[in-house]
Length: 203
View (tube, rainbow, N blue to C red):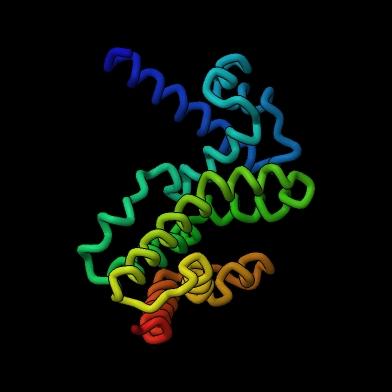
């Protein structure tokens, strides 16, 4: 594929995602059909299926794209040279910062509203986003344990504990429409989580 074709492909994909975003925001997941997305995007259904095998996969691509899930994840080995506090702060902040965006908040609530009826949607989102990030964090914590920098006998559990401390009620409040986080709140909670984690797993 030459450079011009690649650009056209990227542009068409973005066009489809833009139309999908509009329809999902207005109608939710269940009430949005591929036909509606095609009309909003100004493309044919066939064109959509050339890029996305199903409505579910299209929705997941939108979710992961909005929250940075499509960005290249770092290798755990590459993170070992940086201070542990900096790496953990980056993980926690990136995980929560997407929730500051209004569109991301709305998509988040759509997911919450739909996953009970469409569990495969939640499974797709988990496997293509959070699970990948948690895998990198788990591997990183494993390496820290092996290097003796921290004492972490169960890295997978520790990774979940760390992210739960960073959250510290933010997602619950969003689920209940009590309030949305500010950047200052996220920064405070992540800083506190890093301190607690480092102290709790000190060698």
